Image (cartoon, rainbow, N blue to C red; front, side, top):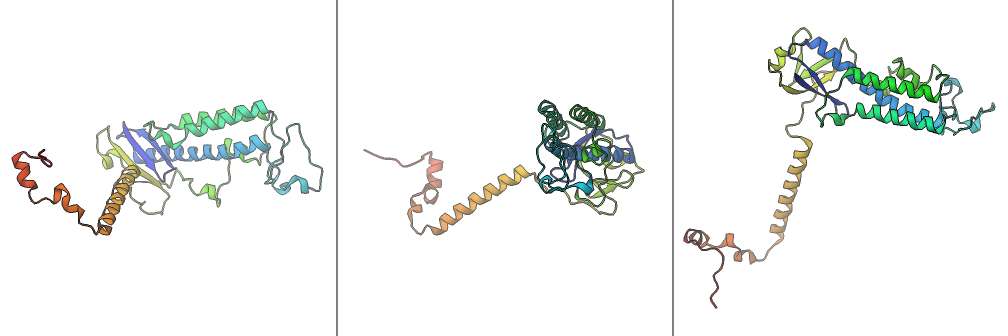
Length: 277
């Protein structure tokens, strides 16, 4: 199976497994779905933590700090005021909240970029199962359900209005997204084999782009760890050169490398100084 390492940024990356016989169009569709579902899970994690802490969202036209509200605020047994004024403050029972937070953490872990280092490809069905688990945990916390304007409910039902928001900038469209590799766009009408060859053991680093965004920036020649080692090496060399320039003494003449007889001693099998008592 061909391994595609989709990497838009350090955070937006995952592995996707397919075959060279798959069409580019089908591959783009599946990869975009995985990409967007990962982002959806991350949004659920952020909003779900707020839900666990401060309860359901208020209606958009009623949002505001409770202590400045002109109407009486309904406070449940686990009330905690939301400092942003977005949520009611009526959280669920503590034991149910623990379950919700664990489910959110597990889902976020299942979609995390760390699976790239572990060489485990992501699958759309597995990610959707994590969202179903979040749905169940939310129902345990709030059996009557969440209001239709709550962001957690919108994300669970895949009914979010993200256009024009920062959260929507990374979301890709299935029909118009482009797949790039080695500075070239993969044509939707081709099979992957046309671009990557027929070896099923191939692994490439590719990028999903929005239509019209142009060619993405190429990956650096060396990885971050190698670059760090190179920077450390050159820093040490610079420090050594600086010390040599600052040293005006002639004590270096006593060093083995400065001896005019070092070559002669080497071939004679003599190393170091010979001392006679």
